[in-house]
Image (cartoon, rainbow over all chains, first blue to last red; front, top):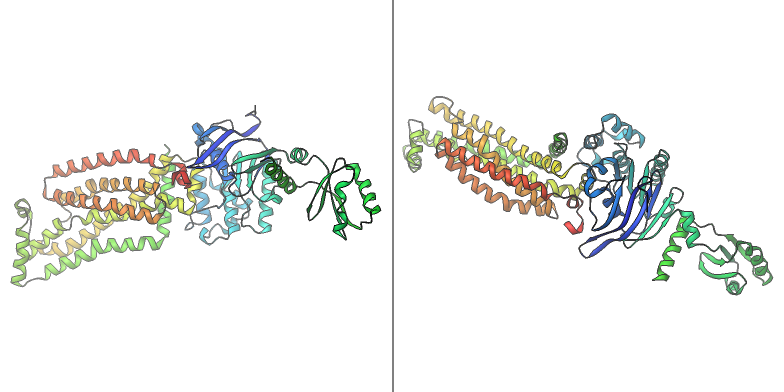
Length: 309
Length: 274
């Protein structure tokens, strides 16, 4: 049982359909308070639907959701006043200036001009507040959307593909903000399909695909679960000379992915492996233990799922 | 319900409308044509007619009006009496057509426009209640039409008094019937049309569909209000009160249930609700 005191968001067996299309199917996960949870998955995985259900903008067909200890079905207005959302394509009233858009948001979130100005400064958009938003670049719109989302100092911040269309510098600024807010005890939920973005900031990963949760947990524990056996990447001047590797003691399997990814039963097999390769006349160009990245983990989990299906 | 939130939604919509010249300039031209240009040309031409044959023909038109009206028509010659009749009785429906057209044009776009722009997502995730959004949108659609109606009515009064008043011997417009029409009868008819149009705007897929569908609503309401307005000007004041009261009751019932047409899922434009 997940504790609502320690988890800002709890999904339990949640399903949601649009007509015949099942957008979420028996989804369960929780986002611990003060952590960064990354919803990771390809387009159509159900990430945006999850965000919309969290604020009560949509209601689920089955299951139970708790946000900050409240039920979106009955306390949606209160949840929405305590949660900030950056949608995947931030939209504004283009005829109004950035400042007018922020003032509107400040009014409906019962904040004030001081907080609006401070939020704009925080995201480096204060210099453009007198311009009409219609003339903003994608990066400026995202910065304004971020400022708008934190205008009421939300306890939970949900960012749906926040770096989509941003230049690398702006994307890095967004990721730094996420770290900063998490450092201040805010709960962050970020949806992305970009694995490198999630790397390093995710306290917890929820891997979603086709409306279901494939796996959820801390990246390190997921790595232990899905990539329990050590992997060594080997390459050689003559790749054909590596054909015998699968027959060696302690080798559980191998596959080509840039180099030969050799799965072994123990890390201390590596020196023996090198000796054997040299003994058999292989001229190695690369022997490197694989430290699994989120990307490796993602593809490993996807592969494991395909195999199980 | 928090009225500050209703006014915030209304203010944002009105301010946006004010900044969109492409939207309000055609509506301004429409109002100018109906309230100033056409009455000025029509009444000016009639006032200039001094030829016996034409004046007699215009007098015949006045003769077709009900006796009760004919007794109220002022003026010493057929041309002046005809101008008076046109100014007070025959042009009355413009007081309804223009505000209704403007309000429906604004209202049709109000909710579906949020969805098309993507700003509906922001509203859906906001702590605004659907009732606050609905009332904000309603006021933002009603005020431009009704405001245009009041200003247009003022301008029409000036045109009528300047052109026809000099022949009658002083300013005579607005009459009691017109005041009742503009202040008591027109507002509920605009509200009825908007209550229906906002429901459509919440349900259709695009602004273009909303405009097409709203014309189906606006036309019957215009025709109905045209008939009512014309009839009321011929009737005793009490009838105008009664007709206005009935219109207000219908408007209230439609508006009270109208908020239910707005759902957050519709603001998001998700498949199941589209």
